[in-house]
Image 1 (cartoon, rainbow, N blue to C red):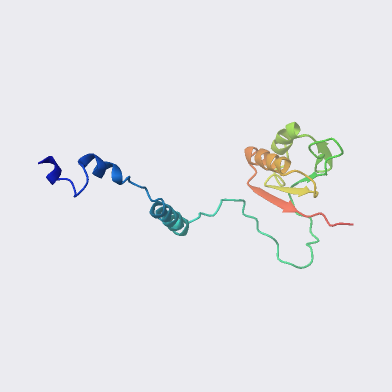
Image 2 (image 1 turned 180 degrees about the vertical axis):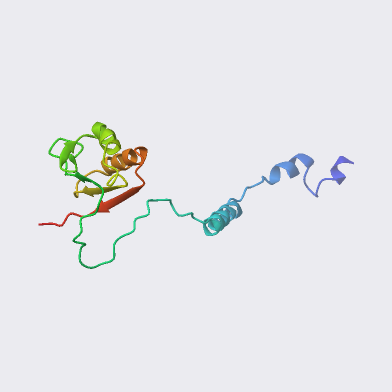
Length: 148
């Protein structure tokens, strides 16, 4: 009676061992690639916040000297990391800058103009901007020094 349930010519044990299950990876790889494409297409990239700079219109430079604190940052010399900073014709370091901004005359204290040379690292310029904001100066401008 036991042999009537098994296929013809095979015992139960032989029927079980005949077929081993195989896992086909192709459909799973297809699904993963479809999900990847879906997420790439549906993702929206937000613009990175940055510093808004209003550039002057092209033309002749303005002959009038702007009223404000002028910080000129020179290229670093040889082994120096930071360039020399000149605030209104006086050499200052980063530690003196805050007190100079605070004690500046009121008529020029509302704006800082940063003039930097080509090889000045951005960290130094950002430090000057941070100190100006801490001193209560809201307007920060950038100027280009004409090449000789």
